[in-house]
Amino acid sequence: MGRALTLHVATWGWLPATPALLAQVYTRCCCCCLDLLEMSAEGSPQLGDGRKEDAAETRRDTEPTCLFCKIANGQQEDCELVYQDEHLSSFRDIHPGAPHHYLVVPRDHVGNCKSLRRRHVALVNEMVRVGKEVLQRQGVSDLSDIRLGFHWPPFSSVTHLHLHVLAPASQIGFLRLAYRLNTWWFVTSDQLIKILEAFPEESAEEGSKAH
Image (cartoon, rainbow, N blue to C red; front, side):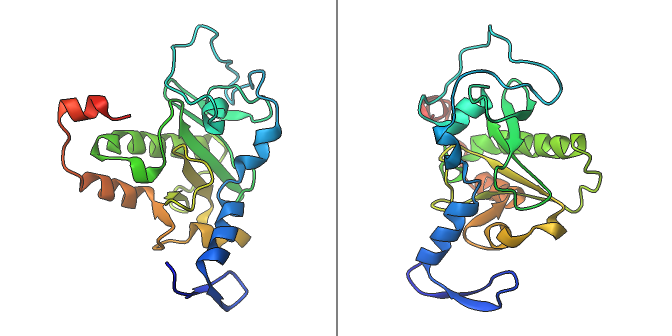
């Protein structure tokens, strides 16, 4: 990571990119939800299908200071949810990399993708399913031209698991470098699942102790 790399950056041509430059680019483009930290955390947003969060909600395993925990559970009034079910929520990326750009996040606090293990394969698969459903709800019919993936730490601005859902992939704009395939900072959902499936099975005791 310490050596200079040569990367093709949109229409800029071939540029030498140091880790410092990459960090600056990805800090800005990887959802950049830090802008929301100064917004009010009171109130409950209207959900995309017209439902509102039930006041008698099941107690959740959340982190009080985690921005995405707040958004996913309707505690950030300036961020509208486009989807929510018992386990997952989805909302628009505030710095979209494509005409449609959404984040799918667990409502319980889950660390970034590097912290996942084999037992999380089902979670990732469900996040992918929800991401595709969100796109269809938003009028995207061509699911062959989409990109689903995660930024690999340290190139993630929020340490709460979030799936990037972009469409059309062929129209990813200026920030295309951040969502480039076959790089060491962005992994597709399929690649992540393969990584997780390579982990050994955990014992019941290990799984119960893991967060």
